[in-house]
Image 1 (cartoon, rainbow, N blue to C red):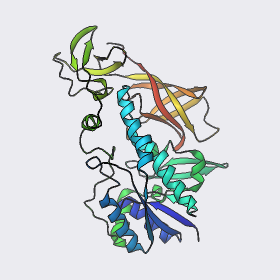
Image 2 (cartoon, rainbow, N blue to C red):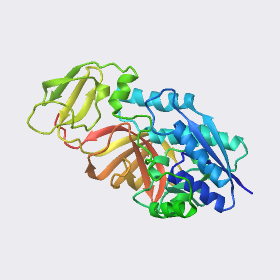
Image 3 (cartoon, helix red, strand yellow):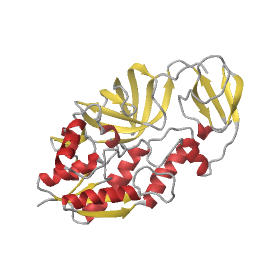
Image 4 (tube, helix red, strand yellow):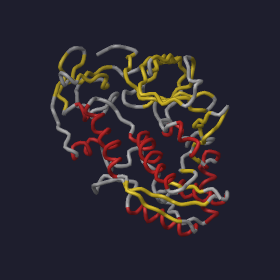
Length: 351
């Protein structure tokens, strides 16, 4: 009997994954991790989550294990989050958490304990073709989470099971209800930033990120004072408090002069992507469907690759191409590669 460890939060999706794998004949163990050193900045991985996951495991008659990942989470996720905003970037902690925590230290622990596979409740699949393994979109387009898994190392795909990829969310809810799994229907869905309870700016302030005032610049003129570059994000419109009588957006950060440039909505049709995570030798210069943010529309574009960097030219300009976020390159519903958005060329340069 093959052994599988399932990452569990006690929610509907991870509980369903454990149930389905047990139904398929696997020897299942549930594993939940604790990630936070402080109170007040968490929505997942809490004591309540541990107890909820343990309750489901007891119902299923399977073992439940808790492991501590605080050090890795602090260095790879929290520190990166803070440093990114300090440098005028908009980070994606969920993508990094999947790489370094869930499919990093937690998966490695599972395999070291004799598991043949590690599984989660993500809505995506692992697909194989010609000896190569890919992350594939889940069939439920509204729930597809292949974007968040796009930075997991390809070498690990052989040991990953994603049983929910072939189901719709409605079907999973029905499975959980029919199986009478002890999952609270009021338990919230996973959050985009699990360690923040309110506004990310409050989190940065509580983490000691200084508020260093500087100038807002519009049409080459000083038009106001900002509270500090880390407290603003690319493309931001609300909360600028600049009385210009028109909508303006954050278009550029100048770290050297501590200035923030405002202007028209930042559209882009060309940008570069660094730190590429490539799944296949088929990822070459060519045309791809490109996702630049979770649940945003797909964009068609041409990609050229040189020296570990991808240069992208979109068919149409896009308003959500943001430095620090991740671009994911698809063909035939498969993830071919992903990487961090680096330089963004503005479509209309009015700053």
